[in-house]
Length: 231
Image 1 (tube, one colour):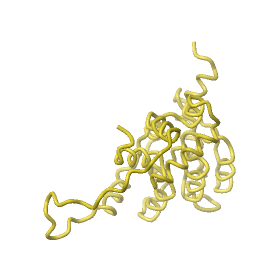
Image 2 (cartoon, one colour):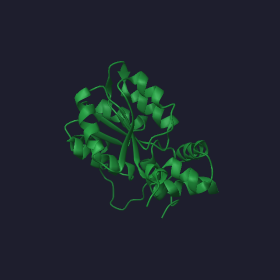
Image 3 (tube, helix red, strand yellow):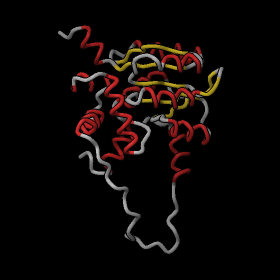
Image 4 (cartoon, helix red, strand yellow):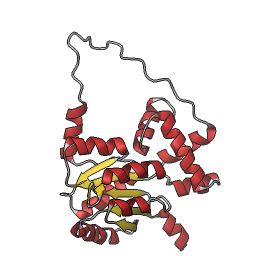
């Protein structure tokens, strides 16, 4: 039989920054039915959300963009800096290109519109925590349209592309942390496996992000695989 401590560590800990009471209630009710997810804390404003970032990092952070005292993008940007191992997802009514791109640049790994059913949101939380990047279909189309590059006229099929970026050098500890991230371990779990503090793990993650020039766990895994740092 698993101990309470073991059970607590296996849960996906979620923090919600959302001012829509109806959405709050619906999501809380859905999370309460999920045995593997726990809502750790909730904020209803930008200021409250930023204060929550002073606590122990959560596994998943859900952020609305239209907060009463400012933009949720500020919370995303701060969370990306203070909680580098946390997976961040936008839950909003804003689907325009500007908000989408700003959120992704700030560190969001997922972007869902609020037309998704609460139970679907729970499944997307699991997907995000597992290394996925849940994105509403309408948002995915905007991103594809924005970044699709036309083939230059006269280009020859098979013509050599620009040389790839040089492979970065990670220390043994950074490589170990990167491999743990790829396997889906949280910062707390990595700290326990490596017998170091959670703060030390966060420091390693920040160094990895800086060397790979990325802003999220999903991007780090993708770029590391491109450079041959992961199988």
